[in-house]
Image (cartoon, rainbow, N blue to C red; front, top):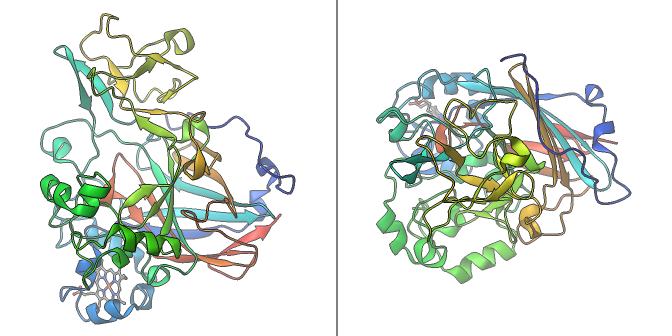
Length: 436
Ligand code: HEC
């Protein structure tokens, strides 16, 4: 299986403007790679970093000192300390690697930034599968969950979750992002973090439950909370948050997803402010569930792929499509098709045609997995035309970035993350994009 080459994603999508180079013509072998060490962060939340437990560092962190001012070159040591059971990791994942080495290369022209990423997966297969609906005792129920879920480690549900590569980007508008990176967005109360907020409490919060209709806490920025420790429920008003957003005080967050974006040659496009949100418009993936009928919306089109469903032992068959791609390999779900116990249909669908607006800005992202390693090539317009929820870049500019890799069927804090870095569009920085 290790030598199987998997080529997924877009065939060829033409880029927008005449000034843009053909991404396939970029000679990556002539562009130096920055080797970024991502490490396992455990539960090192914004609040923990500011607590007395972060000995002799809490005051400096509050003042905004950078993590690397004390921890430069310590990624391996931190990863090794945090990946096993310790005060910041109550439930270690068996066999998880302390660090992931991410090679990053960058190029640009008048129109676009081009990024190429390479990293090795722990498993001898890429994480292109994601949870499914399975037919059991006459009804559809979810099978598969990320490894940190108690359903997996406690109840034996199979670990199934897509591989991801995430980019957080800022232009200097978000306080402390340049110094403390992703840690400004990671808080107690969030999923899989200490003092996880319960559904009822989140529902009762006027902003998260009331305005956003959410029942959990995800990434947010300290500026959207009213107290010094940025407690999850101390939320500002809708109007105050709109003001921060209008001033650009959000983080761009884009994710390559091996199940939910790659099959249509895209990455998703979101931002972090009072929550982790999708940009305006229509996202490229959606939940494959008809709430009223209590059944999937789509199934595979047997006339196209040769099957209507999968079984647990088939979902990692790399010779077959893993995702439901609307308009390409799906038909509407047929409840009268004589469903058999154990048949499985993906929990999400992907839809390039229907994706729209700022949520659909990353239209040219390809990925291959070969010999245990992902190679992802990503085109991002310097100016997406959507400054309300994207960071706009220009030649000569330097921006702050944080990277994360989700490997081996994991989500939430089970990822590997980088300390913040700078990227220069033809300018001096940790990662320098080379003019094309
Ligand atoms: C002023 C110096 C300083 C700064 C700034 C700082 N740290 Fe620390 N950090 C320390 C020291 C010293 C320790 C060891 C304390 C201990 O283990 O008792 C530590 C421990 C940690 C640990 C726990 C490791 C373990 O073995 O349990 C983590 C995680 C961590 N720091 C992350 C960060 C992050 C992320 C940032 C940036 C937001 C940061 N630190 C900023 C000095 C600093």
